[in-house]
Length: 288
Image (tube, rainbow, N blue to C red; front, side):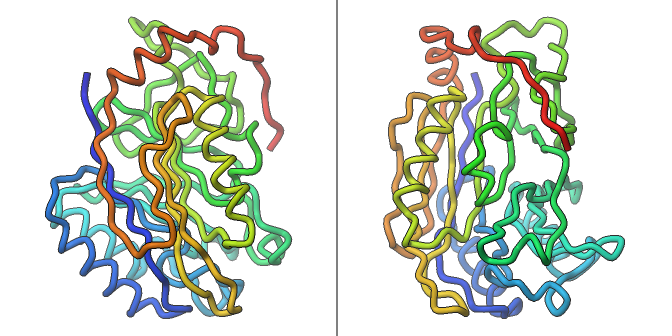
């Protein structure tokens, strides 16, 4: 069974300074010593969590997407993180899944953080993205999505994803099982959250990441920023990698840190076979 090596980059962000942030992340990625296959950056990694999309938004042909494509190609990695995108006169908090060959998938954050006014500036996404790498399926979500378990709920009816990822409507029960695939090959194997999650609610962040791993019987990776943002709100990081039983494999604390971990598909399969809780899952659909 294939393994998957992932790298999390937990660091401070320069407020609304794209050039400085891209230079910083490029240096961090170029300095990687260990082989890796997937590099995960925080939410709005080029700007910080800004409510000024009219000044900061780019198109899908803009400099940050070109930067991601160049880094992914040069390092032969998949690179993911969210950026501010303008499309059809709407702004999106868009998570990009960039492949080394320049193909990409994307997910638009569904649950906008109304407490900070995100719902007034950004348009909500309506579809999930299940990406694929080396036989692993990865569900890509953003920050506040973590508080809403229905949106990430696992289903035993898996659907095959293309290399850049398969965008699916909000219907966790709507897939069909590919020929030859037997449970417990569930819809996804790794649940990924990128975030700008403040320190004052870090207990919820850590607790909910573990809950999502336990209830969905999958690995979970949550990648957060550190430091103060432009509103002097402190972020303590607490990036985590959690196994399918809810045990913490990595906790970044408040360190400025790049961390690499290899996840084992065998371990995931054994958990799902030994504890086949997925058989008792409720089937439901989500209204867009």
